[in-house]
Amino acid sequence: MTVQFSGKRAYEHLRVLTEEIGPRHGGSRGEARAARYIRDYFKQLGLGAKLEHYPIYAFEDAKATLKTPRGSSIPCAPLPMTSATPARGVTKPCVFVEGADAVCLDEKVRDKIVVMFGSFNGELQEKFHSYEPAGLVSIQTAPHRLHFRYAYGSDAKRKIGSVPTVVLTLEDGLALLGNLPKTLTMKIATTDEKLTKGCNVVADLKGAASEDDVIVMCAHHDSVWGGPGAVDNGGGVAALMEFARVYAEQGVSRNMRFITFGGEETGVWGAKAYVKKLKDEDDRLKKDKNFERDGLKSPMDRIRFLINLDMMGPLHGKSNAVTLGHSDIAASARLLANELRYPLAVEENKVYSSDNMMFNYAGIPSISFNRGGFEDFGGHTVNDTIEHCSAKGLEHIGRMIERWIDRYIMSLHVFPFPKKFPEVADKAVKDWFKTDNPLDYEVFSPAKRYKPKGKRKRAPGKRGTL
Image (cartoon, rainbow, N blue to C red; front, side, top):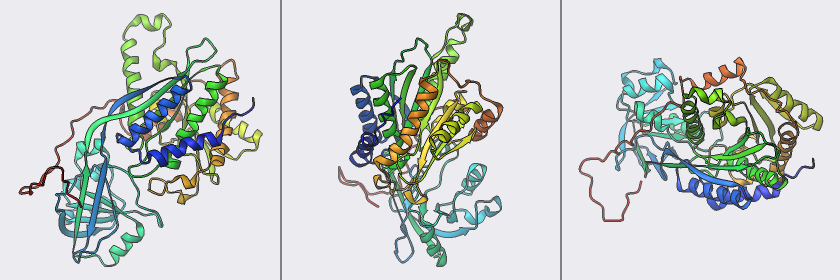
């Protein structure tokens, strides 16, 4: 079959997502605008498209400053959804901690602004919080990288609390440590933090075959906060939208479902909500003993396979395929790449940290395609711009994926990949989650924001600035 994927058409979607819409972090107005744009395009193609909402903690803006006793400003980025400081900021003694190790934690960090490389995670994070530090200055460890843009996990914040945190580049961090002052002044404000609605976009394309199995193709339309998210993952969404056009026009033998998820960058919240809904319905239906006896399938049962697109667009870089499931999935990608003499790195039964993981946890096998650029493409920073992408870059991997789908998904009468997970894949998935059941979660009410006593009243309509 002749390839139909157009890099130029995909690039136009990428331009709208990154330049007209811009930052699309989970639950923000930008993400909602992107979801509507994708839904409307699917409808233009004649697909049954809809928005599916789910609860997510969100914010619209975040600001921070870090100053020395003499008033010199140190360039920094706030870590949104950590605890904000009072409007006037906090001025505290600062202390340098050598590393994220338990031996570095004792009373010396109490009520101090702690300066360190990286940050504490897991049980060490809880121990760190127990000493009630006044703030954290986290220095990135990679040279020549702009401030990483990410948000503090809302679930962690509500379980163990948080510490006001800013991020420094390695270069600025080393300069600070070269002449570490006795005190630092930190100000952090995250505006409009709230429990709100995130958006997934779901569109179905009926296949010619009478089978009710569904092949899902997905990508996440959100970006890191404040970043345009071109490669990660405007490129993946743009490619998915182009695949929807190709298959809507030429028709498909198997049922296809195109989904763009929100909230991936803050904890795969969109995919988690989608799979949780399917799993809850599956559990409810199968409580009826007659359901399986009569040979019926739940919506979860019908999802046979997942194709995930995350990070695409660079012309020069490296194409990858990461599989979780039967070994034939990886073998198929290697075989086709060898035939086409296409340089594709294939990793079998390896974790790819993206929306596919929620489906994998539910026992659905997957293949994740990505094309990353050089290390300076600006991933998770404000530098992840469309300048790192091109129509040719999208077409480079897009046409390879189209050939793989045509051969292994659409052309064969019998679906080639067993749904059952091998033990090695199951272990990889469970090790990644590190919890008994990631779908067993609750939505908490947002904590009240701290308001310092004696704060002056402002005129109506006025906002304080940092």
